[in-house]
Length: 97
Image 1: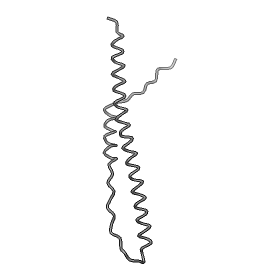
Image 2: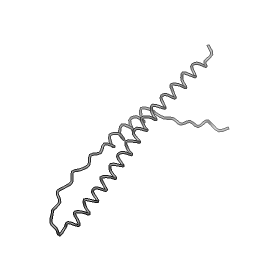
Image 3: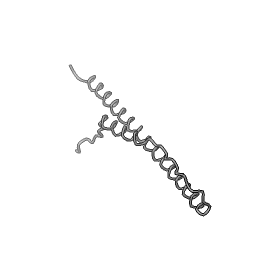
Image 4: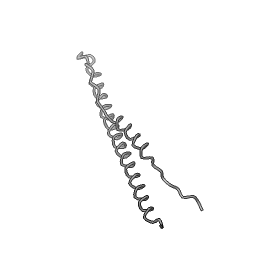
């Protein structure tokens, strides 16, 4: 017979990691630098601005995904505590005096 496998969650450590992720998920797009309006580099400036807009959109999505993972971490910690509390109360109810 194999030993019972368990899934253990340390709620405080999970919350700490979730807080770190939540802080990392804050996004502030950098200000665009002033580009020269010289017609000889106009195409380059247009493509550079498109690349910056693409990077900004990807960064925003990455930060949104990170915020989602942080919220899931907080929910996991809360669920682990609620489960442990419910199991503890149920166990205490079954003890024989």
